[in-house]
Amino acid sequence: MSDDELEKLFTNFQDHPTNDQYKIFKYRIAEQADYFQSLLEEKKIFFERDDEPSDNYSHYFAIKKVDSRRVYKLNHLALGRYRKPFVKERWARWAILLVGAAIVATAIIAGILNG
Image (cartoon, rainbow, N blue to C red; front, top):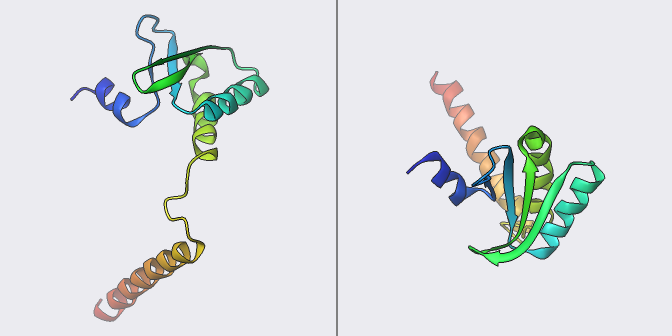
């Protein structure tokens, strides 16, 4: 599988198919796209938006590649704002954290005692 194919599978951005000066950022959810647009406008980053349903996505943004580094951060903010938590219950998140910390502490203690 090529790098381009992997990028399309695991990210919401890709190189523009016809203009190598641009990257395309794509969103399925209108609220995410609207928030991403507001972040771009706030940072005064030039973009072109197209809302056309296709390929599981409905909202597309063309961003100049020279702005890519700044836009990646804004993209993560837009995706994260509307993301559901992996573990919904607060107590369960703490339980996972504490069990993980206990495993690491046990490994460190075992390493010191056996070392």
